[in-house]
Image 1 (cartoon, rainbow, N blue to C red):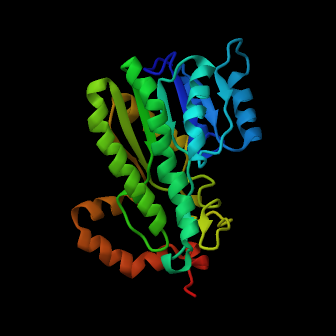
Image 2 (image 1 turned 45 degrees about the vertical axis):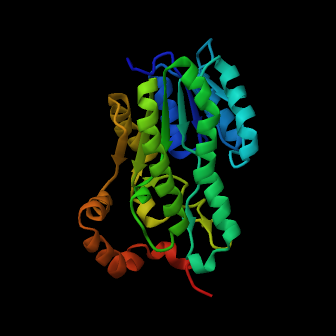
Image 3 (image 1 turned 120 degrees about the vertical axis):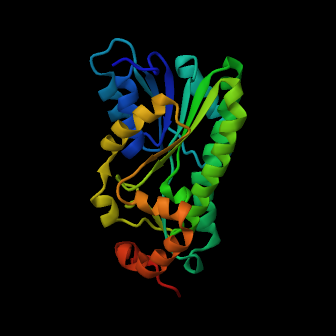
Length: 280
């Protein structure tokens, strides 16, 4: 498959499942080599083995890391560069979702979310940026969410970090364009992945179940198939969503209507998220 990613090196974080795994596979199909990063070493090894099968030259290498350890990221970036000798694309995809009312959620849980979902991609980007600038080329992808533009009950911290992602990386796109570096923000709607199962609740435990909104959603493979043409076209803002995308349209153009529907219908629509959302 002919692609602009032919012979490029792509560093994919959050690569052990979901969107990261699906897109790593599609990067390799497009002729790229990938560096796979997440905490789950065995899952990464299985993916790398599958991507390298039948090839005499490695197409995928594993770099296990906890990206919430912010102090380790500069050294981790140097290790990533050394694996193939360069990085052409940084795909900031690692992160977690959240379920819990603000009044129920200790600040320590919110701080954990902000470190992983907002500060980590910023810190990793800043660590790899000198390498991209020195080469006067490159691409930074970041997975945001429709929640980067929306607000919903029980998702305040998640909305906070995704609004932050949008503000930071859309601004960065303006700064880096003249340096030959393209920044692209991916905003998926509901995708059938482990994201809702591994969402962090107000108690700090995992949500442990797949929400109906995700269970009936597009697969990570479908998301990857739909997003790649827009990435290759060079779009800065890329929204890939189902019918939930209407909420984004309403929030942007008729915010009073959006708020009316959230107040009236959110609890019913998001009922399977609400088990943990009980005030003390």
